[in-house]
Length: 111
Image (cartoon, rainbow, N blue to C red; front, side, top):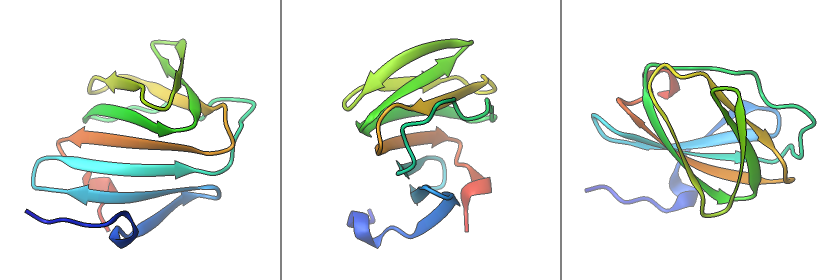
């Protein structure tokens, strides 16, 4: 077992106003994403990946788009994304924190 405080997890900038922190094992990855650039007038571009994803909204409010349908979510809510499914979010609040879990790990996120 390895334990970290939130502050010990290295920060990786994603874009201006968004950053992520990683924790992972050989087969599972958790990514804490902080967005500080909301609210947004439009959703981020759709994307997909070969990884299964489960996401927990730890703070803020978002719209999540799956299959073209928006769903409004807030702190404490969860969404799942099957592998290969196009999806995106739109920030509705100034700040949002998502805790994303991926299997297998996102090697493209590794330093």
